[in-house]
Length: 149
Image (spheres, helix red, strand yellow):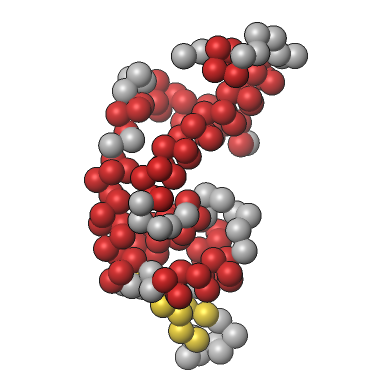
């Protein structure tokens, strides 16, 4: 469905404004679908992102700076987010033996299990991109990279 129909707005001040609104609308649309999937596992989008990052590093440890650098949403208070995830048993934290000011974070078996359960459901979102050919999807990614400069 066209953006104009979705948001009931027919005029934009420029093509760039329309593109920006479309990016925001589409990102929210995709996030809503992902949120529906992970909600059943009692995790947030930020927690899901941290778990995916830690699984990618597993079995190595990660420090908060490394996690924050690659998070999709850079806004959350990572300390509080990790506190909640430790309480839920999704991650473990230890103090670095060499640098006692540094925290090491690792995904737990429970965290791995949550991702194992959500992976098949998340992969079901990929057909949402069925309207784009591979070359179009690559072009879209390239254009979004270009937009971010």
